[in-house]
Amino acid sequence: MNGKFPQHFLWGGAVAANQVEGAYQADGKGLSTSDLQPQGIFGAITPRMPGDSGIKDVAIDFYHRYPEDIALFAEMGFKCLRTSIAWTRIFPQGDEETPNEAGLAFYDRLFDEMAKYGIQPLITLSHYEMPYGLVKNYGGWGDRRTIAFFERYARTVFERYKHKVKHWLTFNEINMSLHAPFTGVGLPPESDRSAIYQAIHHQLVASAKAVKACHEIVPEGKIGNMLLGGILYPLSCRPEDLLETQRQNRDWLFFGDVQARGYYPAYMQRFFRENGIQVEITNEDRQTLRETIDFISFSYYMSGCVTADPEQYETARGNILDMVPNPHLASSEWGWQIDPIGLRYLLNVLYDRYQKPLFIVENGLGAKDRVEADGSINDDYRINYLNDHLVQVAEAIDDGVEVMGYTSWGPIDLVSASKAEMSKRYGFIHVDRDDAGNGSLERRRKKSFYWYRDVIHSNGASL
Ligand code: BG6
Image 1 (cartoon, rainbow, N blue to C red):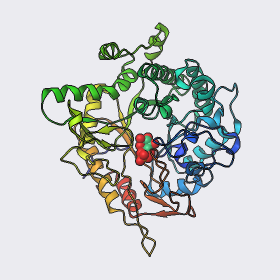
Image 2: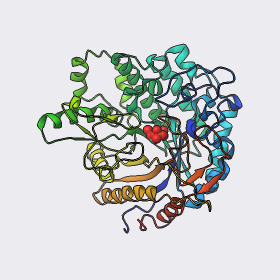
Image 3: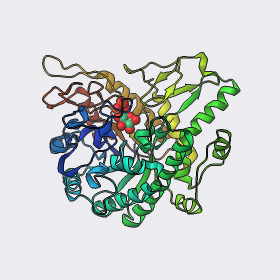
Image 4: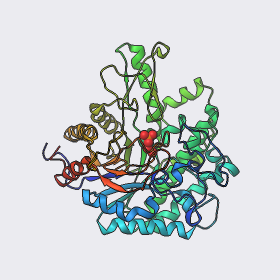
């Protein structure tokens, strides 16, 4: 494959603070919602008692080992690394007047290390975590005051890193709050839909405020949203299936519609009315929402199918969503259906809808790896998955879609979000740690490491 990827395409990888850093109480960090879910998004919400431990407390110890990891990313030729800032390192409880200097200094060191190799940071302000103090004392995003706390945090990090970070994202997979309210908006899992949509509304307003602040403070920077790109197909061509599919795709496209267009789409009025959902939206909120994002970013792992008669089918669970399996597709070891063409389709859907540049900020295969006696790890399944998807990205670029970059998920093995597993590995770099937390944390290059290095060096020509 030749010449499809633009010259300054941002090749790289993506991680998140709570899945790699560890050091969960170091240098003044406060507890986050992620710290209260040691078994992951699907696990229980547990108060942290002295002596408790969880796999994320150490994770892969990126907090201390980042120089070695950045050097390995540089060896693959990364142009970009997506990670998040842990809000609780900067504002430990969330409502402090002044930030925690030790937390700010950590990200200075991290960004400086990346700059040594010319790796551009792409920074998510909130990736599946918020200060637990805001949940306990204010009710999380259910309370309007959280908007101002988030804005203070966003302005603080824009000011601090404006010369180092030019690409920002607001909330990771903002649409998943509908399915995991504690992780997304700090609400109890049993919250009703009015409460969840009210909290989501506050988060959308906060996102727009962060966009405005970024435009003011980092005028040459770019800020995007981040969607879980769970594209759905009708299971059949029955019109009822088609309409239900449109409705379910709107469940997640709604977030992009607000963030990219600056107002609530008309179809939400009927949705709210028919479902008895009340959301308080002030005139000031409407004004704030008009500050729109510069680009759309999204994760893509799988597609799914929709039927108007779901009770007749068994559903399969992705990390967040339940979907009816597609009979034409194979699945990963975790039951996620593998659909490279779906990525080309999704890129075209999003570009047709928004006409804004797109950034694929997560894509990858979670799989069990075997370390051979000679120490090698021959992860051809991962190479095939990624190669097939990137071929479809090239096709979409050829279709005319503007794609800024591609950061594969978990370029180094990390703790999985849904069930806090180490054994579900995404990396080009193996980390010696198991689900029980045993292991030396030693890093080791897999076969895919050399494959991805060649892809980047050839700007996609080797695919
Ligand atoms: C995305 C998240 O939903 O999927 C990541 O943004 C997550 O944080 C990734 O790790 C893969 O999911 P999992 O459960 O396999 O880690």
